[in-house]
Amino acid sequence: MSENTISFFKQPQKISIKDLASLINAEIKSSYDEETFINNVASLDGATLGDLTFIDNPKYVSALEKTSATACLCAPKYTSKIPKGVIILEVPHPYHAFAKATAFFYPEAVKPKADEQADTISPQAFIHEKAVLEEDVNVDAFAYIGKGTMIGAGSYIASGVHVGANVRIGRNCVIMPNCVIQHCLIGNEVIIHPGVKAGQDGFGFAMSPQGHIKVPQIGRVIIQDKVEIGANTTIDRGANRDTIIGEGTKIDNQVQIGHNVVIGQNCIIVSQVGISGSSTLQDFVAIGGQTGVNGHVTIGMGAQIAAVSVVHGDVPSGARWGGVPAKPVKEWFKEQQLLKRMVKEDKLKKTNGE
Image 1 (cartoon, rainbow, N blue to C red):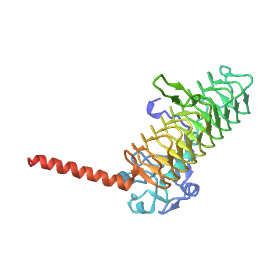
Image 2: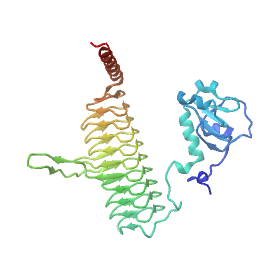
Image 3: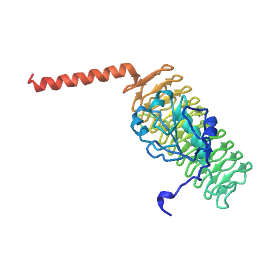
Image 4: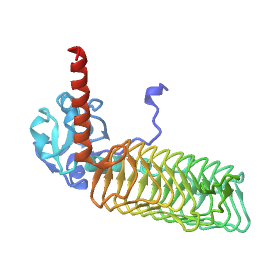
């Protein structure tokens, strides 16, 4: 078998264009044969006959004009740019609709599953006799589940996972390989990707000229329902209160969350963000990649922080901030333009020998 034919997901089922439009609430805006079927999803430049694609960014209009897809999801503003012969599926939010379509074709890609696709407990896993596992829990070889831990029905614990004593893991959760879960209470339908470390000591020391005294970290980590945590993220347990990740929040790879941090519901935290201890993110906050958040600050509900920023102080609800230090985006852009103009003027002066 050629490597180009290898797929890690099952061949998707086909669906008629009419049924697909109904499934994703799209309006068919061009003539079509009711016997037309969609077999797969693909990018604009990779799509062929039988594929569904989408356009949601003007950057890719040139690729849209050359696409060989059978159908294309688009907002009304792109309808006129769809090539002749491509069925137009008009939706308000094409990327959202494409996500729903992809989930239909590849349900296994939505949530990681056990390699054997069976609800079993490997004889090579260590499960303490006082741990409690509900029905249909799958535990792979070389996983460790400690004393007093409870795991809910339908959850999957992958190979190499260490679950410490008295941890609670809810139902239909997925803990992927080589995670370490300690001092945690985890809700239902949580997905934790490979290499995550949650519940270890927070970084707490009382500093002095005579040496640094370790401050015992006696809190927990609470991860609420439907949270997803990316690979190699670390979440410290609380020092004197709990570290909390709110329901529906999505955390990217390689994020550091310090002790006592409280993250609200449905937040988005992108890769390599660092959140210092005792900070609070209210609901629906979005933070771009490689941003640092200082300790003891509050980022208000719905606020957005641009990538590669540093948040030193409180951010109002609904604000859009960026920069180092972070400030309102309009103010930040004005400063950038002023700096560019000053540099340009300085170069001109040097060129003229002034």
